[in-house]
Length: 304
Ligand code: GDP
Ligand code: ZN
Image (cartoon, rainbow, N blue to C red; front, side, top):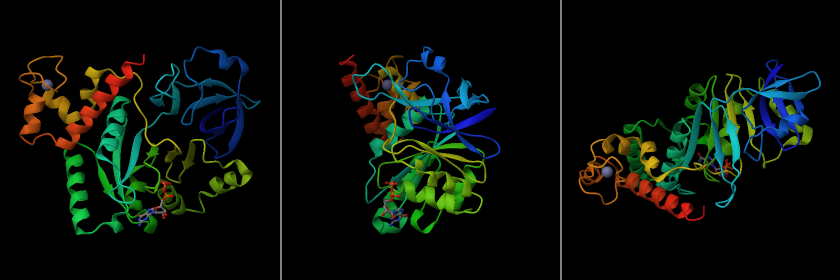
């Protein structure tokens, strides 16, 4: 039988089937030995084949996955989740403030993995006129380069309907710095149809609820929301310096007219990206985030 991995605690893998049942399964012993260079062979979001003994006999081909390196020095990677259609990044202007560098790094990583990002600007109720103007400017900027932005007041369920409608039939990764309102958004999304999501709460009552592991919430509109507690964002594993501009869509667009094909847009002559920054066609905040990623990759490559 085929199912979806909704939780993985290391030894136990929880699989959800089409009839909404959730079963605790184990990997077949031999499966662990396959040459996967990851600390974890099966992850939340995986579609798996389960036999009559609740043993996982196969992992279906992943559409994509996101990963991180546990530390700068580790050779192995840790896969966080797979088969993601959409990433929701929850950000706040205040309490806490989410930096644009954090937002842009997240977006660039998602681009690298081929995942579309939607920015959720939460806690809009906390903004005075001045903050609101700043938030609107940011949203217009991100929208102009192709990222959908939605403002919410999750604690009052304002804007939650738009999120709910956007994710029907999709697997969505929910991310954001701690304190931005991820849990509040999940509660607002699941409370919408509390009766139909009863299986989620009964599943929690089994005492399996923990905040350490990624978890999937199955909504009545067939959306799967993956919550990855403790993982604020995700980094791109093994990104090359010259690759970074590919994941800043507007920088990439302008880079096609740079004089040198290997231009990294810092100090090269006739760099069309620098020209676009000067002329205000590329936001200085975005360019700043780009530089910060270049610097990080340069620093990391010293360790390896
Ligand atoms: P998480 O760490 O991202 O899961 O954040 P939580 O969902 O736990 O929210 C952190 C705090 O922010 C809690 O006290 C929430 O009540 C509060 N919060 C969440 N959404 C909003 C909002 O839209 N407006 C305001 N003012 N507070 C919010
Ligand atoms: Zn250039």
